[in-house]
Image (cartoon, rainbow, N blue to C red; front, side, top):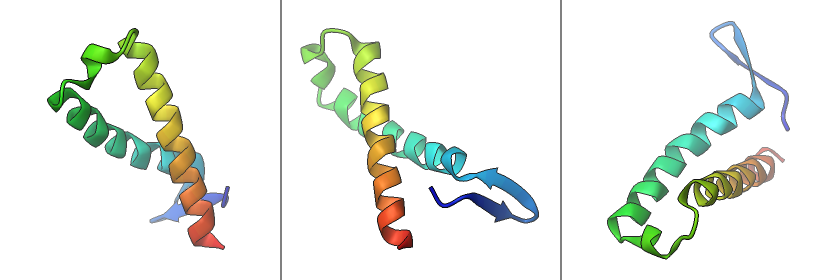
Length: 69
């Protein structure tokens, strides 16, 4: 991770910012999956949502590391 981010004098952990970005991305993907009725194929919806969020968080973290180097 990059460290802390300074936003108008308030230091925020990078993971917190990445989690916020991931949540916004997750809401879009979740809405799309709901609209196309993908959840009919999923056995345990809550477990799938946690896995989807973790996958997106890993992707956002990897992307942020790639862009910062």
